[in-house]
Length: 144
Image (tube, rainbow, N blue to C red; front, side):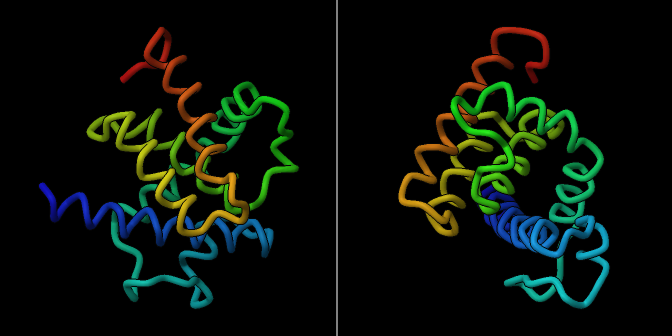
């Protein structure tokens, strides 16, 4: 299990980098992933990273709705790009990846925010937003 966890951690990091580039270049993540311009630590995007990117792209509208409804006092457009990308990645995983517990998605996102977040408050902000989403999911309609 630890090897799978490490692989998924690396995949999340790579997917985050592509999502960030996607925002900056105003290109869909699939275009960035298919092209030569993506940044990644491992040399290639593995299947889990590609699945995350495809999922975020396919479900972006509903993911953004969750973020808009739970990010207190923060308009989605005003969030730092890195934080917004981390949140989108985590919310997709929370909603659509059955074999990843909510707590793992949150913890991984907080670690990404510590490593890549643009603000000192990024980890706390990411944790707060995802914690509210997890509570909503656990209380009702979309729980895994």
